Amino acid sequence: SKFSDAPPPGTVLGGATSLLAAQGLQPLQLDLDMANAAAAAIGTTADKLNSQQIQFLMLKQQQRTAEQAAAAVNPMATNSRALLMKKQVEVYVGNLPPGPPPVSPDALKDFLGQLMKALPDYQAKYGMADPIRSVNIGSTGAFAFVETVDENVVLTMLKFQNVAIGGQKLVFGRPAGAIGYAPNHRDPRPTDAAAPGMDVSVLQQAGILPEP
Image 1: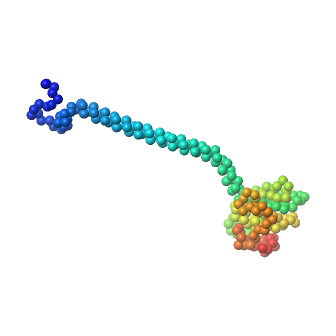
Image 2 (image 1 turned 45 degrees about the vertical axis):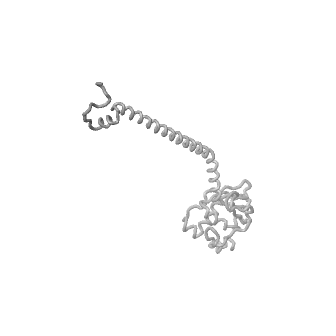
Image 3 (image 1 turned 30 degrees about the horizontal axis):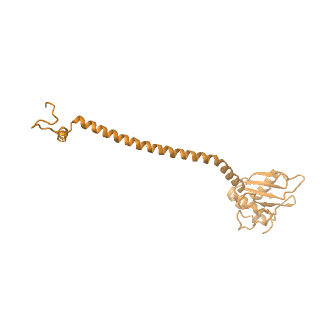
């Protein structure tokens, strides 16, 4: 017929048209088939992307839930760590003279600060900076908690065992909850130069601290 699918005999076709004719396909048919195949491929890719996005969103939600749970716990953990760190730089000072008048926080701070500043090791590392941040006298007035600048000062103050103030020998120890705490603060503490902390021999030689 006039609109036969096959080309007339002797007709030379070139390029894509020749290839299409050889396969018995019209250009329009191939274009539609290719479009359908491409659409199917795009649909499959879209499905894969949607699945990956859903998994990603689920993971993000799980992560967000875990972070929220951790945030609910972290304040307690943070407070516990802060309390432990504070206790690590505190010293218990017991057997304070009862007075009258009782030992004031400023008086105890000045007394212990002068002992620390007399040490060559302290001067070499800290200069004449104050080694004590605060002093809290207990309700009975017989003991105090002294917050120092670091644990090295704490270890050194433990060597001040039996130093006298107001005619009474003071007792030094770690506060409850600190690493190294001993329930009985009257347990003997190391006072020799080889013990942890700074060398206090200058105070021993001056008769301020008892010899080890």
